[in-house]
Length: 76
Image (cartoon, rainbow, N blue to C red):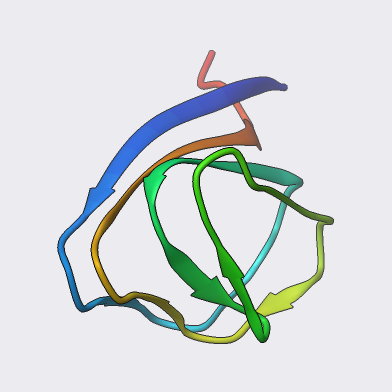
């Protein structure tokens, strides 16, 4: 097992479809805002998801930059 690290930039109004987590995930908001699970996350906010959890649609009203770190199976 290893980690996958992604710096994602979402445009204003961007939507990410609901999804299930097959591995743990850490999400840090660098700039902008992201609405998820009834919460509005802003710069410096953090969200943790356990494997097997479900996320409803994510929406970024003004665009955002997010750092996403998740467990990943590395190809050998």
